[in-house]
Image (cartoon, rainbow, N blue to C red; front, side, top):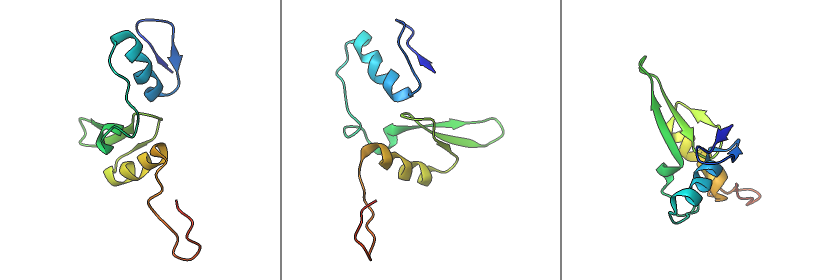
Length: 90
């Protein structure tokens, strides 16, 4: 659970807390489409040399940047791939 440090608001989604904090800071709100792809995740480096890319919207984590770039498409609603047989986008 992600909890606001200024009020009693809490949410399971980090993205929602980030949006909520704008109420307290007075900053202009933004949407996922305004963000650069790499603003959608954070990189965590560990002392043992391992790394983890963490989605800022949900709890998805992966050691691979390419997997994270593909994952953030879920939140944007974009469907950049199309089946050559049935033409369904995904």
